[in-house]
Amino acid sequence: MLAPSSLADWLTYLELLHPKTIEMGLERVGRIRSKLELVPQFPIIMVGGTNGKGSVCAMLESMLVCAGYTVGCYTSPHLLRYNERVRINKNEVDDKSLCDAFAQIDTARKDCHTSLTFFEFGTLAAMHVFVQTHVDVAILEVGLGGRLDAVNLFDADCAILTSIDLDHMDYLGDTREKIGFEKAAIFRKNKPAICAETDIPHSVYQQVEKTGAKFFRLNQEFGFFNKQAQWDYWGPKGKRHSLSFPVLRGVKQLQNASACLTALDTLHELLPVSMNEIRQGLGEAVIPGRFQVVSTQPMIILDVAHNPAAAAVLSQNLAATRPKGRTYAVFSMLQDKDIQGVVQTLKDDIDFWLVCAVDSARAAPVDYLINEIHKAGVAGNEDTICQFSDCVAAYVFACEHAGKNDRICAFGSFYTVSGVLQYLNAQQGR
Image 1 (cartoon, rainbow, N blue to C red):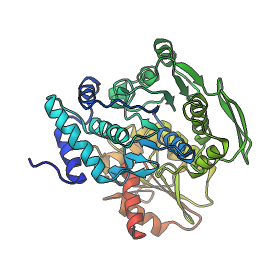
Image 2 (cartoon, one colour):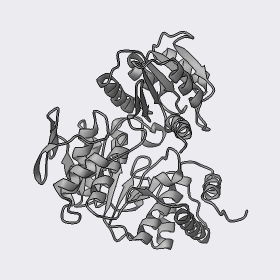
Image 3 (cartoon, rainbow, N blue to C red):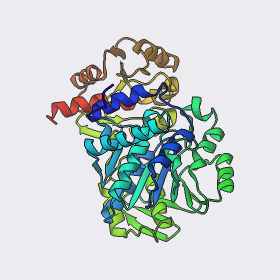
Image 4 (cartoon, rainbow, N blue to C red):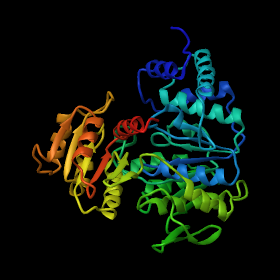
């Protein structure tokens, strides 16, 4: 095979290179890191958890950029372009930088006779770009779990655990105790470990004791007061009063923002950030697909919620913005997710289910989705549960039938939101 020449070629090559999408373990990726001598000379903030990781990364990234730092940020998955995963100062890294990084990693992989998954390639490429760019700080989002995730190959100067819920149970275990153990493995000795989860499994405390991390818990070592028009934060460096709400929407965002401020408190000597920069950063943080409102009449919401815990947050957010009219759901999920659990959580918020397929080998067939909707207790008929060939067809149907007092919510997967976003961008000529 000829060497890939474009980013699209590289991504196709990487997808075909490894027989498994996910292979847990750090030994293989560790060999390549050593071969490439990827030793970051900048502080690393690592963000793990079940839900909320993207929001925390976006807020931290925004505040640190406002403070004048050169900030590398690595997140996954992406919605529209792979480049979304690797950013410097909130700007997507260009194709050439990614291709150059992939080429060096592939050469090292061949020299070491080692296989790498798509995500492992991406993680090494992001760090390669950050090292070459000499960023001042890197924010790394854990892909899956923590203990055996490729991101955990690097040492966190500060680790944030956003939430602990049931997801990826085939890999992480089927209880919150097992999942908490995996996720808390990103903690490091004598380094701050911040937990925004209020119901902390015992296994997380075990990891704190094992690693010797400095533990900061929501409502214990840090917290917030919601004062309706503004909010107050309190933490290791004292109190901040009369803060404006984060521009990111949702009932959990003060929890997420508090974890971010605690991280900055604990890293103050390494990365000082002023209150003005914090305020500005919270007001400028943007992340597509997280209770993203793209229209108001009718209200159109995009949300990547794909597990029951995220669905519960979406339900709270929908309840807080309930319209006078009806709610149409553009809905699809992957077959390896808890479809019935998501539907049960949201069934009282939805009037019409517009069920569609998404472009993924893991996608749940439409008939299967409809069966799971019925199993979850939705007593619908062909008028209230409709099927469509794809997300765009479902979304167009919703737009044609929704009045200005109705609401459309596309959710269930990154693929669902991505399909609608691509259509919206095409309509706007982007």
